[in-house]
Amino acid sequence: MTEQTLILIKPDGVQRGLIGEILHRIEAKGYEIKAMKMLDASEELLAQHYHEHVDKPFYPSVVEYMTSAPLVAAIVEGDRVVEGVRSLAGATDPTKAAPGTIRGDLGRSWPGDSIFNLIHSSDGVESAQYEISVWF
Ligand code: AMP
Image (tube, rainbow, N blue to C red):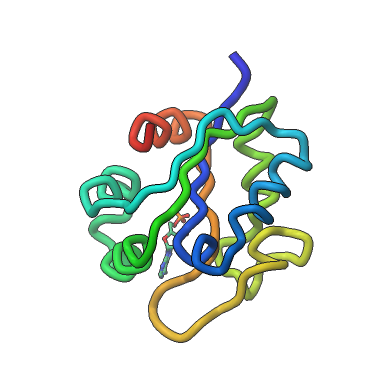
């Protein structure tokens, strides 16, 4: 089967009206959106999604950020899509993310503890399968 990845357009992306811009970049690259929904993430869902981070000091700020507004979850498909969407998204820190990437072009640092970086994308094929099972 062709590879799939999970993306989340995070609450800052939704609130700033960037859903279309972010999806456009993914579609323009040639990947296919196979499923998509907008929802309010529950703390339970986020704990499953971020199971590697729940004990980290920054986790409460992640929950605050990710529950601040609705987000969009989507399954994206294509050969080597996990790697490809990570490349489109850019580095975690939007101030350092390279121009040309989603975070580099559309994101910046804001006051507070949260890193508002617009998009999540799975970091491997196995985590993609797990995250798709969490959100869909
Ligand atoms: P990652 O699994 O590395 O993508 O991290 C998940 C998300 O947690 C990132 O996209 C950020 O939104 C957030 N995050 C990661 N590291 C930090 C940090 N040091 N401080 C605040 N938020 C963070």
